[in-house]
Image (cartoon, rainbow, N blue to C red; front, side, top):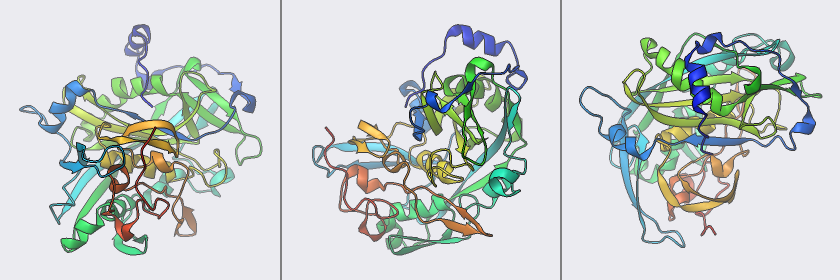
Length: 397
């Protein structure tokens, strides 16, 4: 998914007021008949080609994410011998054996749609037994390095899920260099911010039978514009900048594209040139934290959506790492040509990780070798981190 451009009129209107002060009128509730299917999907907002050089080699006075560049020759059917180059966050697990740490900021968003508020900082007795989503996120395996991850039968260590995945992703090289490679994330939690979208850019979905009868929906393109015009530049004083990732946590609120029936986007990651602060190339990612089972069963619950987006950012921070065409799997019905490790397995989780009696959900992810071809350099010789993929993607037509 590439997010559409909004009109110049909307840009001018948004620029005329502070995003946090937008006045919301009561939107009409969208009943279930307006959503033919609650299908969980994800998106990406790639950095424009014209700005890629500034990301890899920032001009004087600018900074950027710590990234490494890979060069690989495909062994896949239909693309064998083709060469590809891309970038990932941190240091290379192929050539180094140390630890890189990147800061990730988390901003809880309190979304108010009409008279209904969706707040990740408040205790939720109906869906979380009195717990609150933000505090759960803080003790999740995305943030804390407490769980001993075993990937395809290989013990990759006690660490965060994103680090465990990356170690497993390149296990052949990590193991060969003594197993000391790590790509860690230092999470910092910022104060909650309010998002009060106008009625034309928000909806209340009716969810009878769930722990909550109302579920939020916000229009993704208008939301993306507000993030880049107001929220992200306004967070520069808090430390947000090109050397880190800033994320925005939505609670029991999903995103839709243009119309409420075109639902649902659980999260996306993007990169853009922040010309408002002049800081340089900024990466960011909104994600949905679901406690109601909006997508049915465990699909997309709690940390699963976050795990999808954080790991996609880690392996494709600028959103455009090229790969041989793949598809007809996960959320992709056609053929796709970027390295998005979550999309091929959207809706497929690894085993739950219990913490203090709460079972956290994490999405299964595709390995580097699945995109570029075997033999696998991943843990256990498999092509995904829970063994669903046992061979590389075939030719996509």
